[in-house]
Image (cartoon, rainbow, N blue to C red; front, top):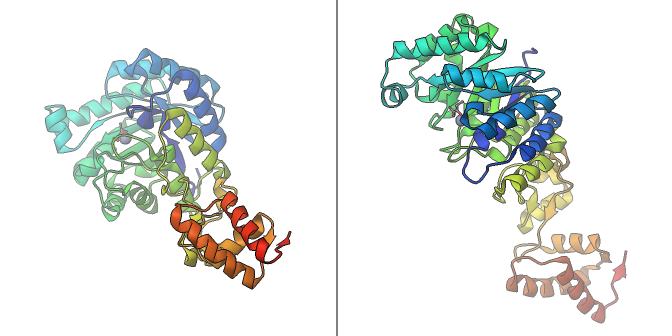
Length: 391
Ligand code: KIV
Ligand code: ZN
């Protein structure tokens, strides 16, 4: 694997789909899995096979149709989970079992009523057993974000010895600060024997709105896989949004980190996921929200009309959005009105624009947005006073 390549591990169909209301049937999951493969994700986490016969069937069908990506199934550190996942993945071109256990003191005490030593033993047993089915075994240290680094390093070293190929370091509760999460990855890189032979993976939740920042901090500090979902859907406040981390890396080329994602498919993929899951995306969502490339204040509109780069740090076409939108409101200026009028066929003189703008503000004060039909009406009024040149 090239050292500057960041693997994109998509868990829309597992961590994303486990959200209430986001449940999909197998047919819908197959459509999304095929799209993720075309999008260029490296790993598709297709589900949690032991959780239900329906999920088993979905993972199994996805394993059959995905051509390029690795297909992954989640398990607990439980023998039967691992056996069932291996069975579901048996037709995959590139199967991966994702097994693990909670490693924070809180999980060890309250979830397992166990000890650190016993948890290491269970982790090693799970990885060794998974290795009897597949070569590619990813281990997750659940709640690694709140796990003491020294103990986490011991867990990691033990599972590497047992054959883990990828170590997932989840910030399960979305608690870490970016510096802290990056330092955790660096600590593991500096202190775990054998770490140079495995991939460290970031799996960050968004409880404090820092999932993307934490994942980026993780790869800056040496992780080479990011686990994420389309539109950032997932447990509670969600997971790292795939479209965000991919575009952060693309728009900051000096980081010298790249992904294999075809970014022009991001917007369409976002629409596909929101429609099939019935999970709307907030308008101000980065990259794929309805307002991500819309400009509404007069100052911004004037800048964007002169040169898009004044207020846009990426080209909307790069993510599959056809163009930036100039939304006409009472905050818009003459430049925006003239721009929109020209788009729909009217070339105004300065005097005509002044007249039209007064009438435009009257309309804009009465409604949230001024649409093309309103502009046609305004132009008809102006035309009565002075003939407008038509384009
Ligand atoms: O958030 C988490 O810790 C997880 C693991 C099961 C990988 O989703
Ligand atoms: Zn998660």
